[in-house]
Image (tube, rainbow, N blue to C red; front, side, top):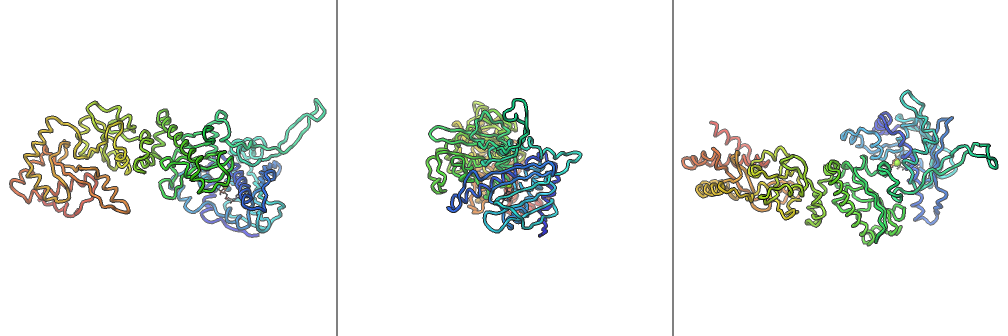
Length: 626
Ligand code: ADP
Ligand code: MG
């Protein structure tokens, strides 16, 4: 007999799992049954390609046996079994390294969520058992082996006797403690209801010996005890059931069972389509973002079934990228079982299903936005970025689909608004939809560029996500109102008297501005009298399409395109600093050059742009101090 230690990390995870407070110990049964079902599936798939192997459905089942006297609960399956090596590698290492770190980083509190995420389902058995014994005979390879463990301190492995291929898992159910009763996991009635709850649609029969009393044959009053083997799961997949028969809880269980996520879904969408294309689908909008969502490891897709049999884990063609957060499955009778991946891509049926699904998702999201705003905002917090990315990608092809799903923070109410809401609230004289970009709401609020727009009483959309402005540029307009950055040099706001005043100032001081522009050389395209500044002395704005925010983002990309926004240095001619500029221009050109450099650098700082020469900047400040 070999005695082995779990790998160090496995040991800690196991201890953690066993000792955390589980609200739902019962899920161990779901985990073990789904493993058994997976094991039978594996034989089924093998038989598809191996002529020597025949899969006779009647021979495959899962059986649950409770023995109250010995306090054991046994799960038998006729699945593919495990070799000695597989027992070691599949049951000897819990999760992969890094999962523990993940749990810590994300402060996952609820123990059962971990199980779903990391394929440590088997270990949930230790929540209810002191000893777990696995006797398994593999379909291929040597004879049976017995694996046994009492939890964190390791496991033993030795040869064993077993007649038929498959796996028996024997749980020695824990003794009751003062706080916890474990007896329920030996009660026939309770076990049946747990199986119904979580594993009803498992495609193989789950059998139990069910006992009861019945009238003796031929008698009208005499009863007898009986025990007979019964199938306790209905085997009808949830997606084939009538929506009216299902509760939200049923969908949530399905979501957990399927490992779609470790959160609870925010919304489920159950589709039974029988028009031009016949299919059923259950789709979910998750509540929180998978931890790898915005990495290239993330794979979108839905499970694809052909007439009840899983043919693909993640069929990417079923979901557009902008809805890649959707989880779920599609079952269609119109698809053939052994269709290849390449053929699928061109399959007309599949394309129709994908189109159909896309419009269903959109309409469900819109109704979530309309009827359950809070939930929608939660959703948007997790996946809004993906929608905005969808607007931007493919040259704006999908903007009409997506624009009504977008939300941005408004300057006045500091809450998320849709574009429709923004436009509806626009005063009559407002021509544009204004937006401002920056790293945070607080920073945007302080931007000098927003002064005039805010003074007019217009609302400003605050864009803080790096994709935001690109998406806005792609939209160009909404309900015929064009978007305008508060930093663009022409704000499109008519300021009657002051307009002329600043134009007059501009003309009067053109020479001064020309001098400053010459000194700044190609750092700016223009120096001009500002029409927007009220209390600040200086700011940068831009001419043309490319804004400073976009310049920053584009140049931060790995293939740095080295783009330059056309920057305009705006000077507030009402500010007392301007008088100093005029004086210096008249008397001391060197001083003017110093002031110009300082003002330009200040404007850079306000924009969050790096100074070309910070040392020179501090030296310049010293110069005006002495
Ligand atoms: P997961 O099911 O997510 O892979 P588990 O911890 O539930 O993680 O199981 C670990 C592995 O052990 C499975 O992937 C499978 O290879 C193996 N296994 C568990 N139970 C069985 C079983 N009844 N029959 C065959 N293999 C099994
Ligand atoms: Mg499992």
